[in-house]
Image (tube, rainbow, N blue to C red; front, side, top):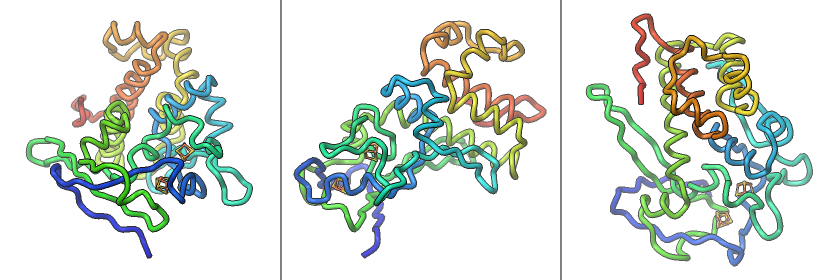
Amino acid sequence: MTEEMTPLSPEDRFRFGCGEAVPCFNECCRDLNQFLTPYDILRLKRHLGVPSHRFLVEYAVIHTGPQTGLPVAVLRQGAEGDHPCPFVTPSGCAVYENRPSSCRIYPVARLLSRSRETGAVTEHFALLREPHCWGFDRGREWTAEEWMADQGLAPYNEMNDRLMAIIALKNRRSPGPLSLGARHAFQLALYDLDRFRPQVFQENLLREFPVDPDLLERAETDDEALLRIGFQWIRETLFKTEDGKTGADR
Ligand code: SF4
Ligand code: SF4
């Protein structure tokens, strides 16, 4: 049996329940190829109380996308046995309150499409049924929106959509591998906030880059504010066109 993906309209309901009572409890927390978005890293490193550079060394592997040259962060899985997630325990996920977006959203998949004419973005949902998962047909019924709300996905979606807009922009404006310098800037500003912050506030990295003063002030102590600045800086310094527009301003 292979996985099945079924489109979900806003009105469609599905039944799903997960917890210690399911026979497959923790089975999906091993042998993963688990991508980490910048916001996943922010939440996890804060949960663990470690600086971002230490998190990246201990809990992640950074690959370089072969076609794009973009740095891609993946959760470092255990080398032993069935390659467990570093956060799985017999009683469940040790970082549950700050688990990555891909762990939260399953069994729903969320896709975005952007109109060429108006630029308007539309959300689409699908239900992903994996053969090892016993969570279907137990628990309560959900719409995709209800599932998103229950799983606390709003801040993840908002930040992850910024990342997707940058990747789409990069693919349009700068196809092919990124330069080494651009790759380092991308990794610093989006994945390594605790090294980006001294570059911003002590080395004056943004001296020629206009940033909202209130946002900048908050970013001295607020990781979310700093990540918003990181997204703006990467978008506008790496992928801006000669007319100064990025085409993905939000
Ligand atoms: S982060 Fe938590 S929910 Fe996600 S794979 Fe690891 S243990 Fe499982
Ligand atoms: S496989 Fe499905 S039901 Fe089992 S623990 Fe994972 S998400 Fe829950």
